[in-house]
Length: 267
Ligand SMILES: [Mn+2]
Image (cartoon, rainbow, N blue to C red; front, side, top):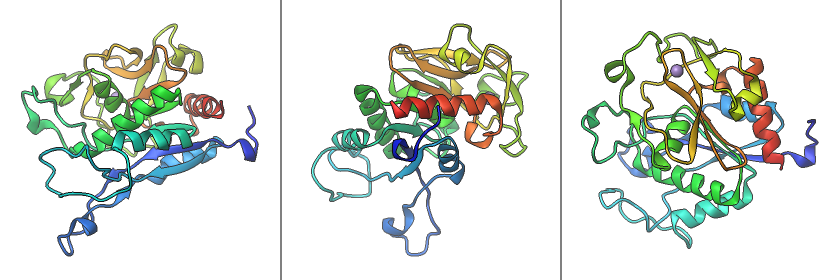
């Protein structure tokens, strides 16, 4: 499908809270929303209008242990504001980043890296709103993990120590280079998007999908049996991949994935 300028779907891309240099030790200087430009460029390349979503700490849903103090915003809870965002957006990308916060039952919470609970709550709210409004969602790396945890699934906290195998999921080479094969599950939506042949993907994750949340289904696996993609079984288009397609946009399987996502966002 060729997208005309007026049809361009607006795709929200979630951001990480990137700490800046600690120059005056104030939260106003420490908080900065950011995401690699590769995500925006991939959306633009396939006909969408990228829009980076700031991680505003809307009130009333802060954790009790949040030490940042009260935040003054306009009306509505974080969940309600996420709903307004999703009314406006045509699609959502849950981007990569640090680990989703460990569950209270985690035996080794020390294995979790760069945890940001505010971001988890914000992205879970956006996902819930997208599902409610049947807007397309593409989860990337952390994004597929967030999707699984938000809907009731679990993660491997640290693949190298908990599930060592033949496949290196934390490649040392740049993310534009693929490093391990992945195969779509026969009959899955992903298999329809790129066929059932093996594809080569990049891999930069130390956590992985363990138990799959009930509304999701396994859509692809690597040769060591690790789950590499999930898709929602009833939503129109909710897919998460464990690799970084935004770093491989010349690969035919990535092109067909982004085209399918953007076309779903057009409606
Ligand atoms: Mn991998």
